[in-house]
Length: 95
Image (cartoon, rainbow, N blue to C red; front, side):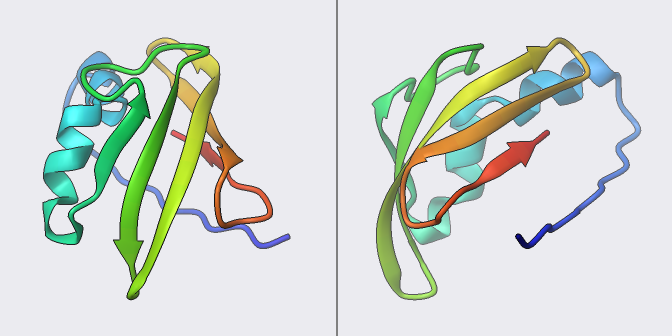
């Protein structure tokens, strides 16, 4: 299994960073060039424990749908979203 680790240091309160990292509207805004869309489940606002979102996206010339569900929420420290349907064998994303 491959592991990708990306660490970002931000000078801001942890609560603000936590909420921004689970804000679907902000994610959509940051991905406007790829025309990514939230098409099912939680499609706006802050995603919460147990909720899921289905994304329609095109990356590297390939279109795909991917559904992710929040499987762990430890406010304001971290959360995990896991792909429940999509192009990868598995995807677990720790924020």
